[in-house]
Length: 130
Image 1: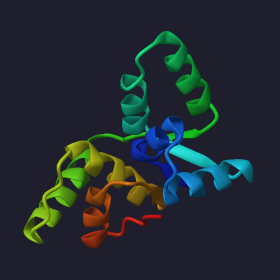
Image 2 (image 1 turned 30 degrees about the horizontal axis):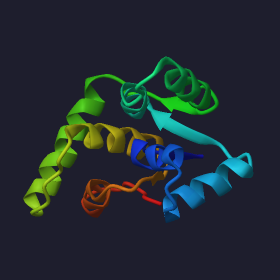
Image 3 (image 1 turned 120 degrees about the horizontal axis):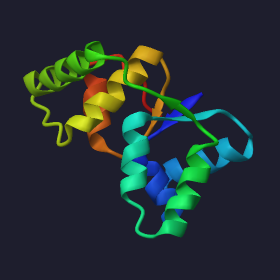
Image 4 (image 1 turned 180 degrees about the vertical axis):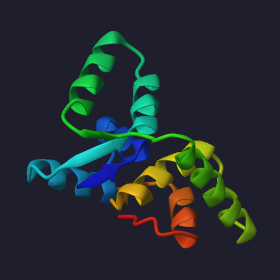
């Protein structure tokens, strides 16, 4: 199983050709398990502009596993990831990225992304990135 970040899903739906989109397409074609976190779920739904887009997005997400934040421990760990990155000189632009990373680390699943902040978090943690 691999967690897919909203940065990759957005490119996928826009028809952008990136290494990550190609990886996702191959993964989906092979019928391999994909997942999103609850934070990514929210990001994807908020990005839809019309009811048909929303319906299409929900249909796609319903075919994935949804990994959820589990209590304050995940929030505390996300804050720790942010502080670790800052101590190493990295600025994480969105705290939600730390929440996504915290779930991936806890569940020990890799994250497919197109966002430099996840590489920065991986530099200071056990986050596996694809």
